[in-house]
Length: 241
Image 1 (spheres, rainbow, N blue to C red):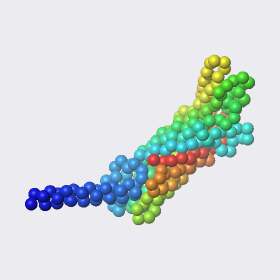
Image 2 (spheres, rainbow, N blue to C red):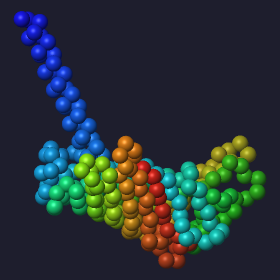
Image 3 (cartoon, one colour):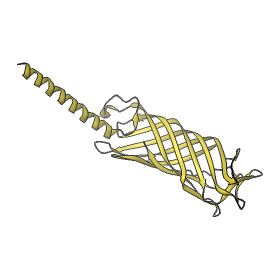
Image 4 (tube, one colour):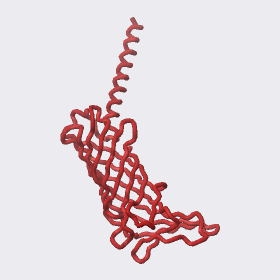
């Protein structure tokens, strides 16, 4: 009798563990973002508000710049994180999101030139002959407000597309030039470069089952203020986790 009771307890424990594993698997397919507050089933999400943590890692470039300006996609990088409030007004297939985040971007110049401030104008000038291991970067830090719409597809909702805008408050930007002269390394920063205090990125994000989400961002607003630098637009692409 004891053996029968022991076998029954073990069977019930295994069935419970398997059911929990299957339930967790379904939830992981339905919601790839890291949800902070969601506790209800997807079918009961109508009118609910959820919190999500978003993390993106990607690469950068500048588009539309004059022909004598060039930028390397790598090692230019885009890194950001945000927390959003996600509202499901009609159920689990559609959500509207707004939040707050931070974003860091670095742009690497593609030629043997460095950023220099000529009056108030930022331009690229060639490095002097005889300098070794020289490179130039442009750094931007932004407070970011994402305003997004997401539509989930299918019964499992493991495919989705997100469209929207990211409002960037560009609180800090500078350029850095690195070079070697003789046996000495030099690093020179240039601040107050005349970036626009507010820019907007248009974003498309695609959720793919069993794969990191992918995104593309493009800013229709130029990076520099008028008369402060070349007319060029920020573009990023990479992965959301």
